Length: 166
Image 1 (spheres, rainbow, N blue to C red):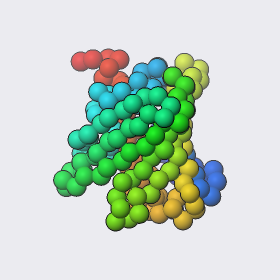
Image 2 (cartoon, rainbow, N blue to C red):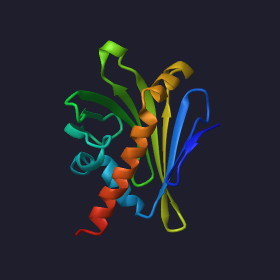
Image 3 (cartoon, one colour):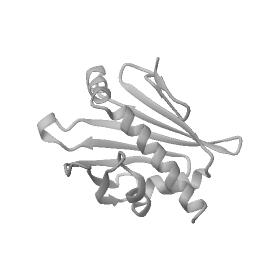
């Protein structure tokens, strides 16, 4: 079931518990993988427009933990953390992700990011598997769809800046 699409990102609901974002980048997949897994890169693009990361820690190995705190333009801080389950360099990441806000129950989900080479381009598929349909729908209603599209656009701009520095 298709949730929405724009000229860059396709958003689908492949099951009752999943949200899937797909975007094709004219960027090498190893650079996209590096940008997704290295703190010095994540600090440059991760987060919605106007946000920044005040904390970014990564222990990139199966069983390794990661933590990020995103500061929004209004000054509010949003902590996230998780554990890497699977890492195939330049191809696949699987990790848990928890929005660490006890007031809303600290929802947790499983994230899978695929980096596939297709005709000289990189197809990135970012899948989120929730514990229930209700939790998935609440995540969507919270505005994460628009936020994820902004994040993917910022990722593209960042990787462009490393491949074509000014």
